[in-house]
Image 1 (cartoon, rainbow, N blue to C red):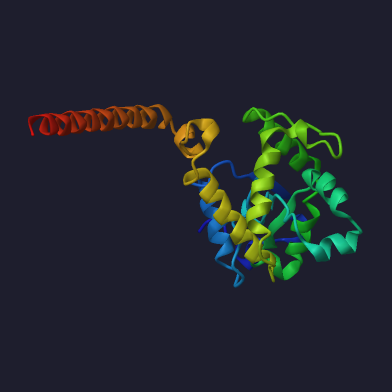
Image 2: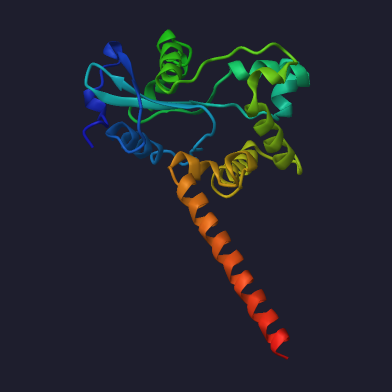
Length: 244
């Protein structure tokens, strides 16, 4: 592919990294990101929660230096919390302000000249912070800073977190990847298979894709048909009894 460099095309002293935000998975940038991950022997996580994926392009030749992706951190990670010195309340308060780099690395030939360290140094640049703020504004999400120990500020998302933790905390996990899968499975169940009373006993996906009214109307029709069928059955049964 034209976005992957050969060694003769790279002049180390002229490397100028440029960040390219991947806005859609089915875009050209999204396909390049997935192609780059195939060059690594380690499987790449899809991440969960808030996610931002980037290509790093070398402006000297318009070739791909590497990729990185930011996402919500794992909530229960004892080794991290012990190393930082967080207790449970501090972890709950601080993790909302954190994004993890769940994918990070360079590809050949840049990986042979410390390209990975270059990718890592780009994680905290102002451009990424600005892109996150712009993304929140684009999708209409207000960034609310809640007071510590006052979950009511965040509304229903706290109830969702409670349901999530109740499900995934039932067993211990030996690796972060196992916890990632458990959380992904719960999110799929919660959004696509779990009926929500507050939504009229439909799934969030039904509401998102505009199927709610159609489903409720069909249920109403089935309920009326069932009542009429039962009424006709009872009427016929009474007529048989009276005729006897």
